[in-house]
Image (tube, rainbow, N blue to C red; front, side, top):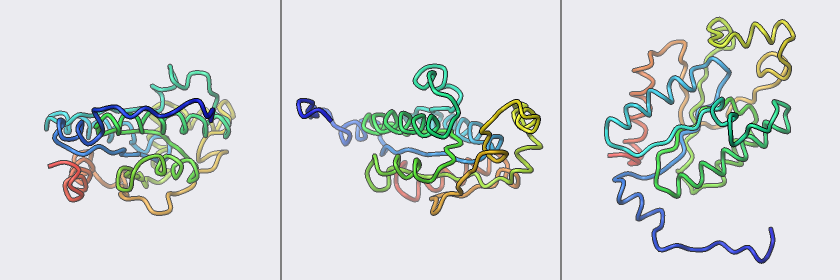
Length: 198
């Protein structure tokens, strides 16, 4: 980094923002195969948190590719850059005192660890949706597995691109066995147990 670029400390810091919001800030990082329910569960959780008066923001894999990451492909290199950018944006939101929910396949352990290392201990909560590939492919909400099997989509996670299972996630959920409500309840219990929310 250029030595002439210096981080400027402002008077309103993360702790003051958290106090004003009435809760701690963190990243809830949803990872898993396409069709595992990342966006669905993250969205349902955000709805519940909003109902409870908490300050949130949801970053969704498809949505960020319309703007922030619109110039990236799905090659391994660009996937890494996609996660780097999302990680940096999430870090800023944690500093803003928000509960940040992210829904990304994020198939590589190294990139998830990179994001974890951007924030303080306890501010990165890895939520692994341990839903079998067969279940995800059966759901196929966007028809992507069908296209990948037909060779119309290259580098598709679980078909011709690897997914590295999280080494030590904070939360594991199988959306093939649990209802949306049960998943949200499990996540809320964790946030309360860790005193992130009241």
